[in-house]
Figure: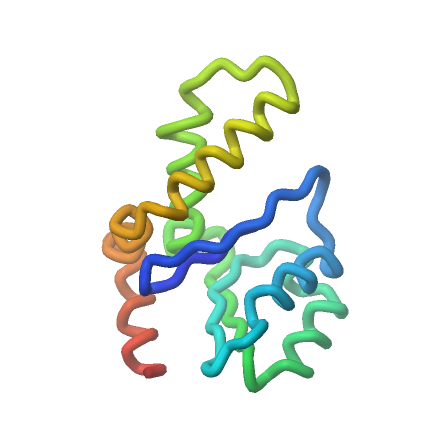
Length: 141
């Protein structure tokens, strides 16, 4: 899981297996901790995004968190999808992986490097299908 901001920040969490609502809620708790303004999340239609536990959490934390669903089957509209595209296409996908531990090590290394690359993260908001997210941020400010 990852979240990027229009300021070029990135937060992530890596979990083995499938993501369920309770795991996503734990990630959200860390994201909204100590926030002064609401965090606006653009999410896809993954099953856990619609789970009752997530809906309840978002409802309770309305002052710190807003969730908006992107159109179905439109990953190109999600700036955060570019994080995973970057990792798969330009990094890990081009390297031979020995085993699960090797994959995990490379994943953490690549995510850590990307997290420090503010310019690259910002570029994900300047693609033709993701520019709208910058305008939405300006409207919310």
